[in-house]
Image (tube, rainbow, N blue to C red; front, side):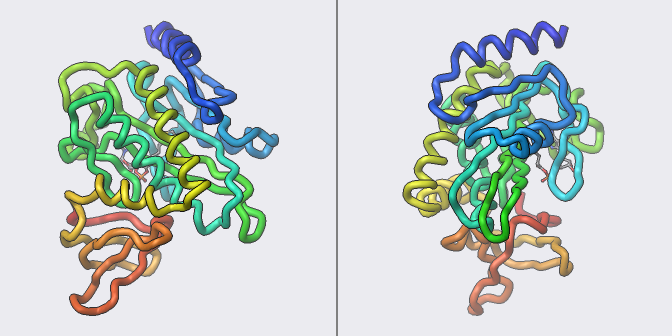
Length: 272
Ligand code: BT5
């Protein structure tokens, strides 16, 4: 059954795709270990900027910090795009934030749902996580060689598709709106938004991406938050993004905020 759904998804996706660089070329797998692993392999083999991998299901879907991404077949989106921007390696996390904005814009464009970004790059709907982003980079010293931006979106997953321990935290667009989303339409719309955002980021820098990110994150900003990182827990109030995409966390009122990098931390308390 899922074989048919997978083939239908691939055919519709190839027919509808109208982007210039993102998704060109497009590699589609009915089943794969991880689209990020495949995109990284393609990067090592010299694949070009925009090369994109989509799968109907992943057997080893990856979250951040070695966590797992639940990837059932026939219902969701698992996508990784390989980018080769001429930018310093420290700018790479900005692409994760950019990806979250692209997903939030796509949800807003295709549904009446209200997407909210939870720092750094989860997208929530009705308080449940419907999307996660995993950004992995290869660098030559300080310069980026390639970045793989991996995006998982729970489109049509019913509750039973998630293991019990995720029932309180994970959601899908189907669960939030009561009707399915067309996977090909969603993917095409997402790649179109991502391409626009990426071109803007390349040409004009991070500022407008940051503004869009903060607008989607606004419901969760200025609230108490605890962040767990390599150096222990840090509590404070998330104020927004610094000019370079680093989170500004006010740990003591009246004192300058601390800068918190997205790469090595996770939110452990508060914040939605
Ligand atoms: C993320 O990690 O949220 C990044 C997920 C990226 C997945 C995409 S799919 C395409 C590409 N290929 C890959 O192999 N990965 C990328 P993190 O913030 O660490 O969140 C992981 C945590 O979210 C897990 O530990 C679970 O608690 C929860 N989780 C796992 N699967 C989920 C799902 N399908 N929906 C919602 N939550 C999930």
